[in-house]
Amino acid sequence: MSLTLNALSQYLRLVLIFISLVLLLQVWQGYTSYQTFKEFHQHLSLKSVTSTAREIDLLIDSHRRAVSLFVEQKSEMLASILAKRNSQLDISKFSSDIEKYFPFHLTYLIADTDGKIRFFHEEALVGDSCKAEISSYADNDHFKNPVFIHPGKRDDTEHFDVLVPLSDQGKEVGIFFVSFRLKALHRILAHGEVVGHQLLLVKQDDLSHIELTTDQGQHANYDCKTLVNGNKIFHSADIGNSRWTLIDVTDDSLFEKEVKRLVVQGVFIVGIFSLISWLVLRILRNEDLNYGKARELLVAVESERRRIAMDMHDQVLSELSHIARKTKQLKQSETLANDVNMIQYSLEQVTNSIRSIVNDLHPHFLDNLGLEAAILSYLEKNCSGDHSPKWHLNIDESVDYVLSRAQRFNLYKIILEAINNIQKHADCSQFSINISIGDGILELVILDNGKGFYASRIRTGFGLNNIETRARLLNAQTSWDKPGKLAGSQFSLIMKIHQE
Image (cartoon, rainbow, N blue to C red; front, side, top):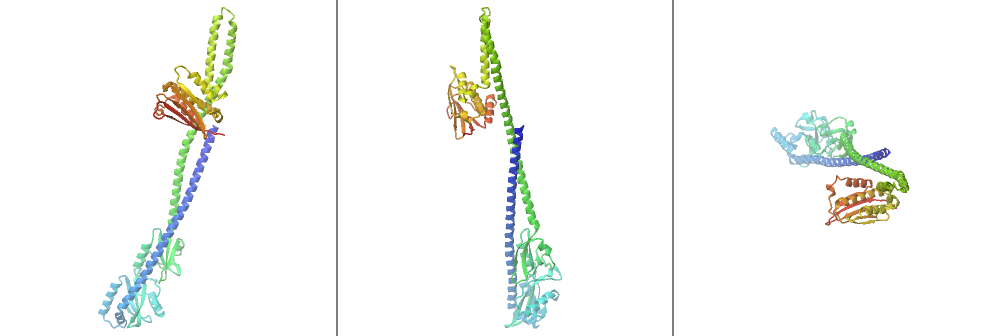
């Protein structure tokens, strides 16, 4: 029982160590995977912000160039409208040109150099912020004003303005103003976003004030400190010629989902490894228990056989010898001489039989003279008849020093089983037994020139099973082969040994 408990304790320690190593590996892999995931999204964020900010900057510049080019081509007409020299027909043609050149515009107007509006397309669409921007533009000598989003009375009227100076015959006479809807900006933001991220246009001087998002698609004139502070701002970039900063924020759920995925993956892998290791170690434990039971059984059997041999030698044989001596004394009587002779002969036969049994149970040659002497004695006794095959024995002289008593006995029994198989089934004229030792390996080879057989087809024999059982006790590997193209069979046993 103590052997089983010790083996169980060792297996449990192995399982715990193995699962701990797998768990540590999964923690390390999860950490590195999370860092890789984070670096990947940081890279995506940088590319998204950089490319989107460039597109917005190009959009603003293209709108400015388009308006400047229009003013340059239509300067005479614009100056006439400013001076109110045009007819209603001219104004209608001018409006159609605006529609053709600027399909996404909201409204347009013309102001003088002092910033006073002289011509409205739709006065209701020009709010106070637009008027203030026109006045600021006039006061700064038409310095290029930064773009920002103007709130409208309705969601679809929010816009940003583009202002350019108006000249007539080389003389500056006013300001031309066009406001544009936010559809193009919204499209650029939506195109630049990646999954799990959101692009926001915010004021440069107040990151908590969102100007435009892809979710709304319109100007968001409210404070959003909670949104910005509750998410991670990976990257940001100022937009040239504007009051905007483009920022990329990520939702916390993006990383929470990744952490959950890594945890579930780690638990699954650890569970699979735990199950596999438990099954494997259970199989090994069962093998060890079976091996331990077989070893204990054989040890008990050998111990009992040794006890029986000693009892028969010390008690039965001594008593029979005493009886034999007594019968000798009775031979002096002529009337009893024949009967005594018969009794004496029978006792001698019984004595010889008991000695043979004792020797078979536990050969005294094996303990007293060694393995080679025990095998040699068996061969001379059982394989020396006229019809017996010739044999050759070669055993390394160090075999008795490197093997324990139990190992010598099991090896002795294996050789005897092999010899018995050869005598019963091989139908050979000669066989050899060779035991060699080298490099920590003991190799036993028994070769005969008989008819041979396939061990894989004969697995029910008691002799072969006995050999395999004793080989497992020796932790040895066995094999039965045909020696090349020659007739006969070859039995091999290889086991590791400890040499001093």
